[in-house]
Image (cartoon, rainbow, N blue to C red; front, side):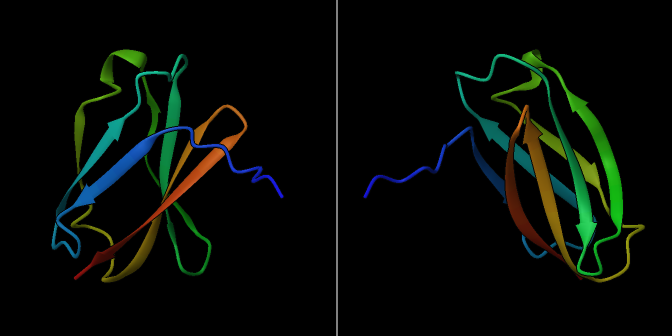
Length: 92
């Protein structure tokens, strides 16, 4: 049976858990269009931090201040066209 999973980019986030700033690293030489990302609470509420990341920012580290968000578990949702990728981050 073949896997239908498509790997669209490699990501990492640190520090995790965090008290404020979180660094999101995007690594993928084949991204050819803008991607977007948002932070979603466990209740499903979208806490948009940054809606667009241009091609020139891919393969870079992006820093976002999430200190104003309540403590808890969040999901960073990255979207590239029709493909989605999710990363969990803990705010303490």
